[in-house]
Length: 377
Image 1: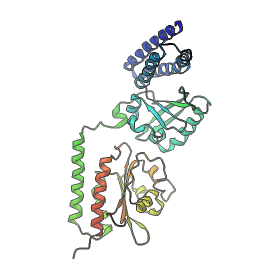
Image 2: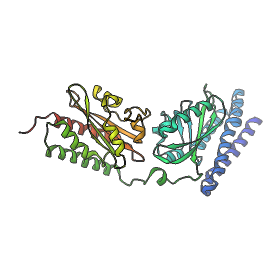
Image 3: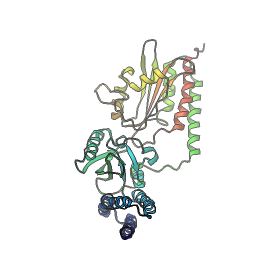
Image 4: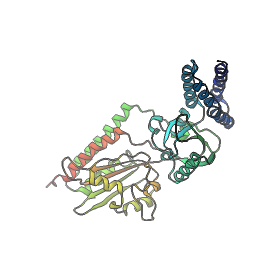
């Protein structure tokens, strides 16, 4: 019973230190590295001292262990979520298990979305291989690591990632605790990381989608039909800029796909030439859409070669800094695929949502009908 009381006192002291860490969020930005060091020390104290102590008490079977277990679990969860630095818990393959509140604000990724996805998917393509290698080394017990990476939505801001091994109780494999902070030691404001916070409501977004559908319908009804290339060119003009940064249109011919339209941002003229010169058969996403007739909606595509490479050999998704894409087959059911429309969003622009994908699916059927309709005389 004396050991249980002593554990309770240590736990109470730990709770007080956690409260002090929470209050430390108001210190000047230049002092935050000291707070980070203290938070990491407290996390190490939990893993190296409090948790083994608790396991020792559990093996003796005291009556108060169940209550202490609940208190400790709640405390550890609160500490992880409320620690005032971005922290993620990943496995050796960098798959996210948990993401705290500070990390969701820092990366702009919701915890529910990130869980179960590789953390490397939120980094710039050039940093992914190095991060995977360092995480695997830490998980193998080769010591803590630190490296500079870049978030895909804010590639100009260097981020310092510190990795340390953590062995959760009752689990056979070592996890990796990742602490993120700007390389210049200043925590950016949400506006700096994510761009301006949108003020539009979901209702307004829905209205904007309806405006897009209306513009698409007007373009299809006011122009000639029965000319697949011409129909796609008009549709691409409606989508470019207001809905997607890049619009790539491929028409299914009698033998193979042919690329008819490529619209890109004004500062990507050379990249647009490379995409226009590409053979659609070298684009795995386009080929899969043409064969299966199903829409693809990857966010932060993990495979840099999913859309093939340009004439210089560079992956198109990397060169265009694609953070979200829609690859939509143009078909009516039943009926063959008449073409494929691919839309890119890049940089810090908001990823395509399920609602936008649904609206694009509806417009794709209208496009298919216009492409297959008999020409007017």
